[in-house]
Length: 196
Image 1 (cartoon, rainbow, N blue to C red):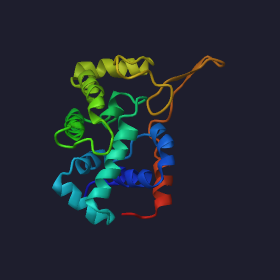
Image 2 (tube, rainbow, N blue to C red):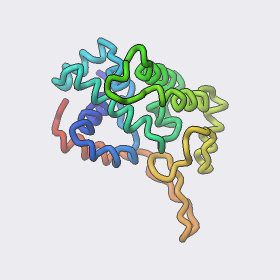
Image 3 (cartoon, rainbow, N blue to C red):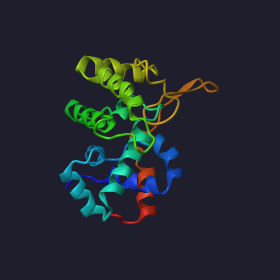
Image 4 (cartoon, one colour):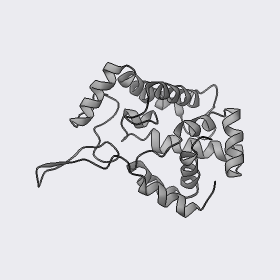
């Protein structure tokens, strides 16, 4: 069975939108691929999610879309986060995420009935993919992140959040956040109870 933590987090944030701000600063929870499959309406993933959560397809897809909008497509995210990934994610999985997000953004498949113009984010997603799609580009981007610079023109330099490098001018030192920030997600899951 696949991890459903990202979908549970999405349902929690849909119910409690004030959690979004902290979620943006936390590492992505496991199960983003599953969440993206639900967002685009892949039948098998939707059925599995309905069985796990007891929520309708409409609610699940709305929650998954909210997560994509607020967490993945947030302008302060780096290229990995835009693609629902981390530095440890395989190229194959990043490619899968990119394809799913592009499908979710496609105006013919998912009309802008919710007032959210998804086409505005196509450039951000394709730019993120172009920056890290090959081993060489990914290595160069990882080096730029380690140095506190972003090589992507459509992603601003991070000043907070996962992977951000913050300079403490007063002490003249570099502060790097923890690699895995799962504490926030544990609290979210505790608050929500065991929504399977």
